[in-house]
Amino acid sequence: GAMSTAARVTVEMARRRIFGNFLNHSCEPTGRKYLKEGLKGDMIASYHEPYSMATFRNRHRHVLWHMLAMGGERDLMIDLQEGHEQSLKDRARAGKLPPQKGKGKRASRKK
Image (cartoon, rainbow, N blue to C red; front, side):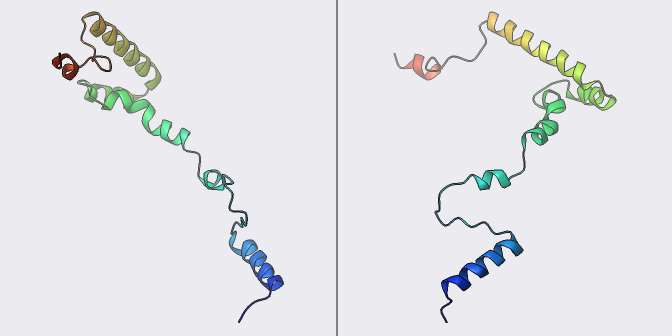
């Protein structure tokens, strides 16, 4: 049968207390979905940080892995970053960087 409004409200409140249900009669966004999620930033950073340069497209990755395993990741990462910046500068000086948007092979072919 049909439940009275007072009984429905009482059951709804009990359900909230027992199961932790969230009641939003207005159906407006509350941001609850994002607040329920765990914070991801630190987890992602800790997963990728020390190994990112050592794994991706690096010819000396086996050496880097051993250095990382022995410790001293911070110094190694600083050295790698400086080397990467220097190689980018060298490539820019030699004109070997990728073309800017709209200046690629296809654009130069159209003329």
